[in-house]
Figure 1 (cartoon, rainbow, N blue to C red):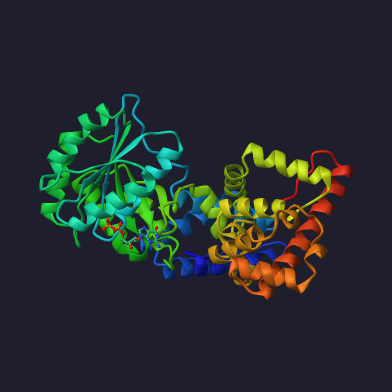
Figure 2: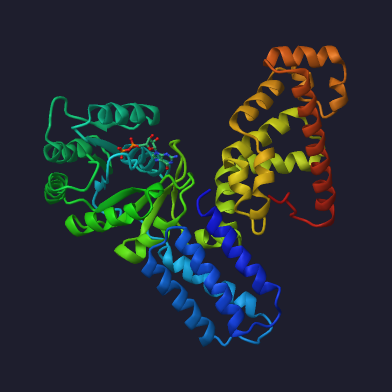
Length: 447
Ligand code: GDP
């Protein structure tokens, strides 16, 4: 996770403050020094760091936190708000034109993740009910065109290309009537990158801009490149004018300096972040939530959103029914596993819960990866209908049954035993939830 060491250092500074009761100006200065060092080590721009610390100090003095009882809480809140501000303040959305097609142009250096991000963005917009068209404007790298075509095919989203053409301006322009005649309301143009910012590249991008008049020019930058990403952003903004930034590879071990400096240096907000290589690895960027996450104050909004997306009304109803009936079967267990799978990786979710950041390493150890989900799924699917619809795990007590299930699912008897244990635990939890429900109406198991 990015910001890990920054996050740890900030928490350490807070811990010292919290342990103090009343705070003196010196205590706060000490904590600010620690934060300053942490920011610089995370590769945050020097001037940005200086300003950040200055603002916190001014606010702390202004709010007269010293010698009050909840001084530590007040300082933490000030830091949180300033950090959110540094990350861009409020969420910035993309412009969707009231007269389709909305044209989004993605620009950036080679390898930043443009082509992948174009597909991710198209997928996200499609899931929001839009009809996107991808345009292959990176004509110098033939692999980029086929890469986009493969991604488009996976997502069932059309890709506009012109075979043999080496003119990205023409291709982008021609994609507009194509989009209109195919009822596409969003055009996402993937443009060519270079290893470094250079005049030929900028000149081409400026010509595309002047011809198609995009509603949104989004710069894709790689978080792992640190301050180089910030420098590239300034150069693109000066030459072309950008509306927003998509910062990719925040799932890697980027120290976070780029994300924390880019808005302050360029004035342009991060609108999306790339958090995995996979096509669903794009998130809208919420500066305030991210600030809370860094400070381990929890990001409850994201958990709720993810849960809402995974638990559609039907599955919620089913879960309620299961709870009421008090009988929890292997089939119910399977549908629960599927819901959790839809919510995404457990450890990334757990990381959003306040105060558990420090246990992240332990949680990673017990985290279920995609392979383990597949195993559990295969085991349940290899049971007979009678076994699956049973709520009594003793039904599987016979070794011959376990061996049959293990064989059918390509797993081992130990794996089947483990699943039975997990099932029994879950069943206990469901029983407890039912009891609670009896006491208090409307109780649902907590996430
Ligand atoms: P382009 O040259 O800018 O079009 O870059 P590509 O889209 O080809 O991406 C370069 C590499 O970065 C590919 O291996 C992508 O899978 C990878 N990549 C892109 N976005 C992300 C991300 O958010 N996280 C991770 N881990 N990898 C990414």
